[in-house]
Length: 112
Image 1 (spheres, rainbow, N blue to C red):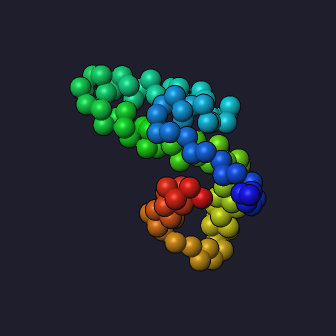
Image 2: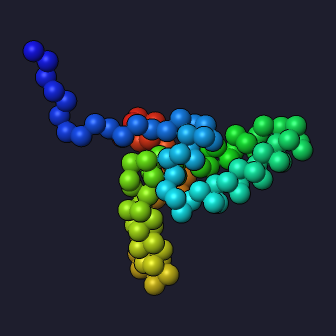
């Protein structure tokens, strides 16, 4: 007898490819993704350098992960709330963006 997994199955993380990232995005992001993809590919072609294409994938992949997990809306609402508090001069008791981004990337990499 085999034990059944407890809780919902984890949402698969999209591969780090433009096709997989685009498929995971919420519809409101597809137009910007396509526009930026074409620009990155044109720059990569012009410069004979893949860096613009790789940077593009690295920038869009975390957004695709949040969309795939249904967390993008919640995260943007939290960010908007923090921005509002900052505009009103309220204490934020926060960490730097670099630290927050590193934590988010670590969670994504761990499959959380």
